[in-house]
Image 1 (cartoon, one colour):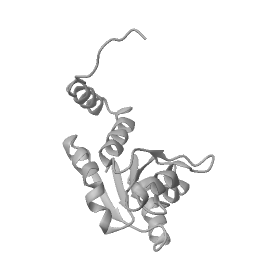
Image 2: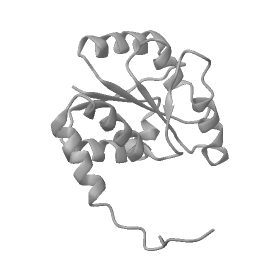
Image 3: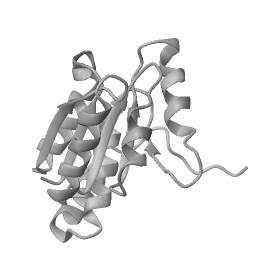
Image 4: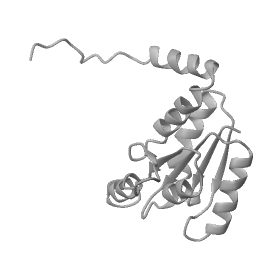
Length: 156
């Protein structure tokens, strides 16, 4: 298993599904968990240790409201954590700020609000550093992205 996806609530399923779909598209093994950082801290920490034993390479953590889940996970492991802020309140700005403002020495990579697909792509890029086949797939994916029709050379 290369990627773990952890959310704090079953209500986050629709928001994290794009990450699942992206991982499936690239045939990357993943496991999903629903564990609250506030209500089930002991279960969360034991799960993190199990993920380390399984050689999980990246954890994607989706969180809304207080959005402590990605930071709590990062504080218990050196597995890279990608935080996905979930729009529950305040257009998701509360979650974004909670995830991105981690204290010094406990980093969490953070993608845009409700952008679980980018969270998965960032996880894939991390894994691709040591996986040539996945690296090739990502390069092909990028090559096939539609061109921006608004692009033009300007003389500013």
